[in-house]
Amino acid sequence: MSRIGRKPVSIVKGVKIEKKDGAIKITGPKGELSARIPSTLVVDVKDDQLLITRPSDEKKMKALHGTWRALINNMLKGVTDGFQKKLEIVGVGYKAEVKGKKIQLALGYSHPILFEPPKGIKVEVPIPTNILISGIDKQLVGQVAAKLRSFRPPEPYKGKGVKYEGEYIRRKAGKAAATVGAKVG
Image (cartoon, rainbow, N blue to C red):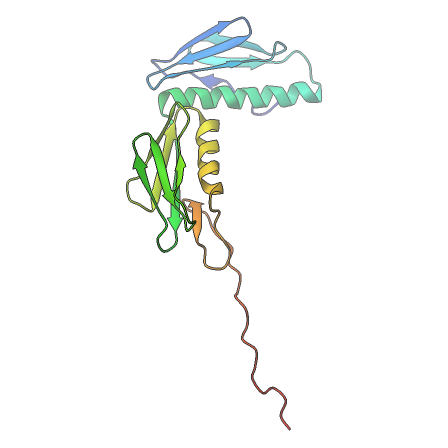
């Protein structure tokens, strides 16, 4: 059995799980998420625990088993606690600010970049060089963070750009100065 797939998912108080027509709907204090589960997997809810079983030990079934257990676990965490990603903006004159529902980025281009986050995602700018992205869908939070980072990824010489909080940027040395009058003689 899959090591991850065989672990039961514990259900927190205040979370409701509904199974209907091959779909699972999870409702919690922060919101509601749903997903369509492959028909080969069986989902059972017993005594504040959710268990996923598979019909065979085929390689594809093993992969689906572990993947769907992790996805359902992320859905449960999302509707109870939520997820968040932090981005840092590095560079002189680089900044972000919230304009209504959109976020405006000044990243060294000749024009500001306006980005409207998708429904269910909250984007905050506590200080002009930090962006906080939060929501209940882990995949969507990561996708929005990656999209904002893609507008100006950090460059390896000065480290300017948009990076994840705590991300290490491998730096390169600049051009080495040529020696003047190297030939003596």
